[in-house]
Amino acid sequence: MAEKSKMSIVTNGLIKENPVLRLVLGTCPTLAVTTAVSNALGMGAAATVVLICSNIVISALRKVIPDKVHLPCYITIIATFVTLVQMVVKAFLPALDTALGVYLPLIVVNCIILGRAEMFACKNTVVDSALDGVGMGIGFTLALVGMSSMREIIGNGSWLGITIVPESIDRFTLMTSAPGGFFSFGVLMALVVWYETKTNNKIDRKIGCAKKEEN
Image 1 (cartoon, one colour):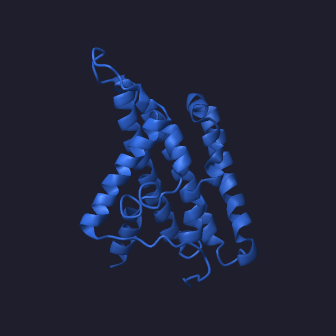
Image 2 (spheres, one colour):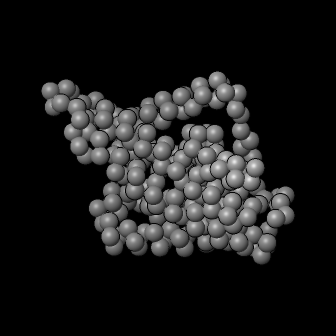
Image 3 (cartoon, helix red, strand yellow):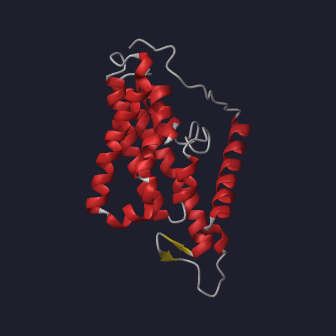
């Protein structure tokens, strides 16, 4: 039973509580970096690392951090890991750092990271919080890759930079601009709403640490 519970924590972030398509968090970087699959993978990986690490630390310190200053403490913890990730990306993947631009350091204020700290990490054990970070990170990455695949294939005729649509077929370049981002976002959200309706699987979007569980 415990194993099933652990597995459900990981799988919740994939579809049931997908941070982008179900909780509608982190939409700004989602729309901005999904013009190419490579950018989406880079942002997804960076956010996943920060999610896992910040969830672990916040969960470990959840009984030490005073309720009155928990938000500044969470942001400080998240900012620390974002800085480390940004330094690694700058050192080893400068092209990705340039492509992501300001959206990489802005992971600090990404609603997904802070939302999971408020909703899950401050209420659960370190192991469960780490698993939640893994699931939400993968779910975020899948949403980014889904949107970027749609936009890159239709807009550029390529996927991960590899041409898959013949040059003789005109590109719908609007997909690589802002309207294309909103269109692909809407299409994926519509599919998720359809899935929610079919499975009658509603979610609770309340967040906060007013009532902490004792573990």
